[in-house]
Length: 279
Image 1 (cartoon, one colour):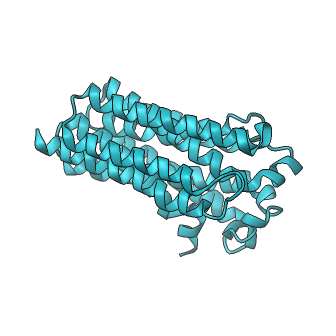
Image 2 (cartoon, one colour; image 1 turned 60 degrees about the horizontal axis):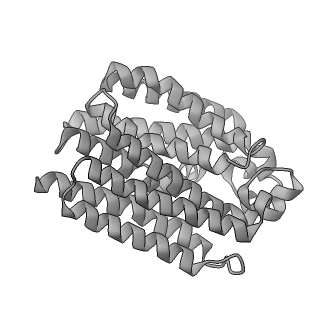
């Protein structure tokens, strides 16, 4: 389906499990079905909004980048007008879904839309754009937590930090393939600013921090052994990710980005499931 290609629906595996983690830990078990349903709709809607906004904002760059020339908005398979309609529709669905959850989710839904849209412009003025992206996905566990219990807590904030550094790390690695294009178009990125060697070191530092914050999140809720087993598996995945690619060999970058990173959120969610049902 063209729209699924447009928003890369398969990438939902990066954020949706973290939203469920927040909800299950907040509930201390299985949340109500209506909470999970509206949380799922809200997450899919806001992700669709963010991806569509990004495609619109980056259209002129995508037309000139060989890696992105086949995107539906570039090829004309989806019109710019239809993209704007879809953008408005997903924003409305997101806000309505949040309203069905609770007032706090509703009030914060407007901030979430604005923050997810802001990311699309950060590459134009700061090499910290990777961390902005991480903060957008990092809102998922907080959203999941307050979807069940409309109050802030330490655990979802620690997961937020873990997701922030995890996403920033793999986005730094992924952006390495656009180094020449970014330099040509005066776009900002950590590989462009510091070079590939330093970028890989920074990405590794980010993933060490991600592992640490995920561990602290488990400790903050006194998690049981299934979560720590999942955490160990995730840490191993992050190590493998840095072993199969290097500044001199980016051939396995897609395996690192899509396959290995897809395992991180799934493993952690399974760890949370095991934790809440073992208590």
